[in-house]
Length: 408
Ligand code: CTP
Image (cartoon, rainbow, N blue to C red; front, side, top):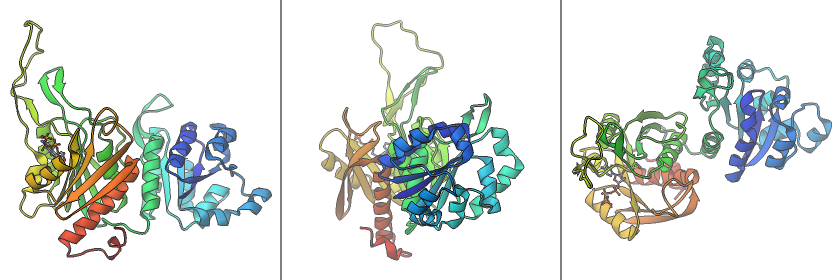
């Protein structure tokens, strides 16, 4: 994957070396193109060290142009990514003006372009910036973020650059999914993360799920053109770009939100680690430590996955099975018992599964299976979504996509 990374002059440029590292971890070749004002925020030396390539910044650099001209660079790119993208560069892209190397490459490339805006929240909300954003989106330029939060200027609002890992994941998905958008026109609902079952106003029962796998699946499904609704328990993750996220706390709330979202859904993927039991009654006041021991009575939570699988004319339904032993047997048992179309099984324990960036899984359906070796969750999610799409079209058939067959 060849990525031209444009860095423009915003304070978030200090995160650029980290972004380069994240892209290179995913095996991308990164050619950095800096604007003059970016050099105020981050040094060429640091960027050259992490990217392993000489930095390009000047359209008129004869020696660099001889090695690879700006037109060749524009052709070389599988993706042009601008992060951070200032209000100024957005305006320049809209106007089509090309006074420097980066904007010239943007005009000359046929590769997809993605930008991660970063600016003060008032600048972001300014009518001119919003009109430029809308124009760029209409022209197919992917806008990643911005996030909401505290800003370098001391104020709070929308305009923070997304975190490097989120940008890298989104960029990779965009560049990797240009040829086949397997889920164009399909609606996919995904649950992710843990649930929290309150005991009293200050305590709850939860589990170790980080939500990373579900979020990666949501991002991968969106990159394949799906309309994605992500029903998320409490996690500490950046919202995936282009995905509608509904935040919930308890299993009951997740059940309600899922059934609201499931109408017209084509595919449901249950990646959440939903509590199987919740306290029978939630104490209104904080429980005091009066006794030497105590009991909490628990009652069953609704099984969201099984309830969706039982819907008449429901979506193609995919479950996850996190097991500490007999992974294949237990997973196949759940596939049958919950009447699922597919189950994705992984082993969990101290050394694998939860709250890690990589994972290894086995996938089972009624008459087949596939094993996926250890891989970054983002890459694994991409392959899993392709497999889900393939199986979905194989089973639900009607408008099957010709190009899906080529993948598996
Ligand atoms: N799941 C769900 N709602 C629940 C419990 C689980 O939707 N109340 C979903 C999970 O999202 C996952 C799958 O069911 O996709 C498997 O969950 P798991 O808890 O491993 O399975 P159980 O059937 O609850 O079996 P056990 O806990 O005994 O392993």
